[in-house]
Every structure is written in structure tokens, then in C-alpha cells.
Amino acid sequence: MIKQMEKRHSAWIRICHWTNMIAITFLCLTGYYIHAPQSFRLFSNMHTPRTIHFIMAYVLVVGVVCRVYYAIAAKDAKNIVYAPVKDTKKLPSMLKYYMFLADDHPYYGKYNPGQKGMYTGWLLMALIQIITGFILYKPALFLGISGWLGGFIAIRLIHYIVTWLFVLTVLLHVYLDVAEGIPILKSMFTGKIPTDFHHGYHEEEV
Image (cartoon, rainbow, N blue to C red; front, side, top):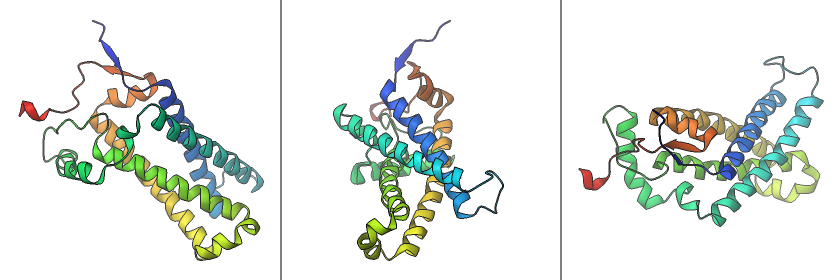
């Protein structure tokens, strides 16, 4: 029997998602190599990882701008922007579910508060990485900004810490998706999800 499917992600959301994912993956990988080239032997010279890093930085800028534009134009922002009061109230029930203290959770909408918090955090972190990255790329052009932010050593430290925040939260993001069900993960490839997929109980059902 063929399952009935419904649309979950538009083509534009999927394109932006995979574009940003690829850019962030290469940025983290090449960035760590540039930071500590003796840690692992991946490139035969430093020119290659730096070139890839700079190219992926521009790809990320384009990807972030396109995703923000789509969120505004398609009125999708409500699905991905964390609402401090509304979503914070939902966190306890979500944490109970993911800590295996509850068998189910309320219906949160398209994304749960944890996912929305990460999406909002990623936007802020991407902006931090773009700003600090370009300062490190062209230090002579941003002497005033770098001084205001504490100097180049502080900027390098911020850039490095945020890189690891990206790595950790991406791993958490994958876990949240898999924990919700494989159809959630597959929908980012196909754009569709089974119509009978359980997204959580509605308050009126309790």
C-alpha cells in the first residue's frame, strides 16, 4: 500500500538547507585544519584549505541571505524563530520526551522549541562567523572594528569557539530529527512526509 504524503519542505528550503550544510561542513573542516594543520594530514599545502575556506564563506553568506529572505517572503519566520516566552514554556515537555521521561510530547508546530532555538542560534552564529571571518581575512580593512571587539586574538578565539558550537549543535540537531522519526529526516531530501505521521498530541486530546 502506497502511503499518502503531504508537503513539509519547499524546494527553496531544501536548497538553502543543503547549501548551508555543505558550506558549514567545509568551513569547520578547513577552519580547524588552518588552525591546527599538524593535527591531521588532509591537505598537501595551506593554500588549498584557505581557498576552500574563503569560497565556502561566500557560499554561506549567499545561503544565509537567501534563507532569511525566504523566511520573510514566505512567512516562514514563525516556524524557525525562537519565541522567548512562548517557546520557553514548551521546553520542559520537550526535555522530558528527549530524556525518556515521557512517552510523547505536545504538538509544537512544524518544529519543536529546541529546533527553533537552534535555527535562531545558527543565524546569530553565522553572522558572528561572517563578521569575524572577514576581519581575519582582511585585517587591514577592519582595524577599528577589531579593536572594538578586543583585538585580533579575541576575534580568533571567538571564531574558534563558535566553530565548535556549530559542530556540537549540528550533532544535536541530527539527534533531534532522528528521535522524532526517520520520516522527519527523509523529508529534508524529498520535501514530503506521510500524512499519518505522529507529530505529538494536541492539547484538546488530553
